[in-house]
Image (cartoon, rainbow, N blue to C red):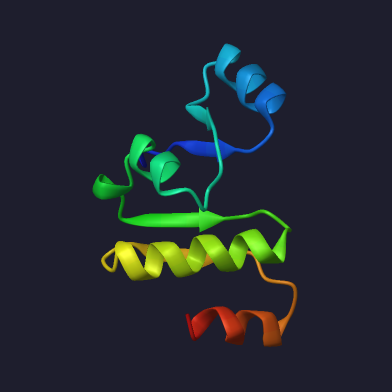
Length: 88
C-alpha cells in the first residue's frame, strides 16, 4: 500500500474529494506552507500533474532546493520542457 495525499488549487474540487474520503488538501503546490502542511518532510516523492508550466517550474525548483531527498516527478509538455525541469 502506498500512502499519499493530494493538493488541489481548486477549493471546490478539494472539498468534494474530501467528502468522498480522499486525502485532498486545498493549496498552492509551490507554497512552502502548503508543502509543510501536507507532510513534505515525510515524503519520498511528489508527483506534479498540473498543466500550468509556471507553477510546475516554481514547485519543482522549490522542492529540489529545499527538500533534496524528495523525488519530483512532473507532467511535462514535451521533451524540451522535461529537460528544462531536470536542470532545476
